[in-house]
Length: 198
Image (cartoon, rainbow, N blue to C red; front, side, top):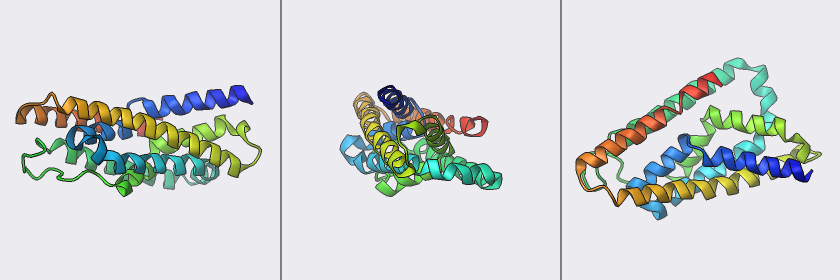
């Protein structure tokens, strides 16, 4: 049991620390708004991931039996990530007044990012299937998974966001901001193909 728990914690750390849509958005928010103003987004993502992974064990059967629902989720998730990437990519420097985002994404936006992210669902389903031995009943498994993923997510998203905030201090010109914003947008868009091929 202890070995299974250690393996699960390592899985949660690897899943939340590695680059992906949530970490890219956290970094971009840190660059543009700083760590403190990005906290609602970070907590929204962490809570969303916590709820999603907790619910994944019960929902996996539904998605397996309804491929159309799975396809619709992929389409909606991809569209949402593209919309976020577009918003990041068209932004200039924070004081540029160019029509880019003037306020950080909200707690609710963080939750929505996870709900519409098929990659996060696949991770949650994989964790539920691989580590079902952690608990004898689904409610306890959901609690263990949700708490572990939530704590891991807020920890590593905070680090990614802080790295973005540190990077922002190096940017001096409007052109540097635009290059970084386009690069972050492209990185976020690059998280979409794995959704379709996993």
